[in-house]
Image (cartoon, rainbow, N blue to C red):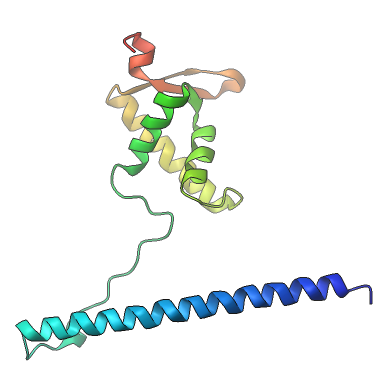
Length: 149
């Protein structure tokens, strides 16, 4: 049996997925209980309401950041770590948010988001950039560039 390691890995993966399904079913059951409680409370205030008219709101994607969250993270990183290029900022931010850095599509989207945030911060004179090694822009807080910090 040369394939026993493959079979044991597949069994382990199946067990992992089955455990994940059990956890998701528990979450679903809890959400159903919570929505029943909310429905009952709504009916206390409006007994004639048609609850089917209330449209479900889609969840934001896991990598969604709330307004200002990326900007705050970038400024904190630059204050604490000093000059960094956008790629290093992207890698650090993805690590902080437990996002997979090997996901090329997500990395590209995060890199674009961070680049846009850095350009916006530069326009607001909160950060400045200069050419670094390899032609990449090094970003740092404007206070450090102006010598006020």
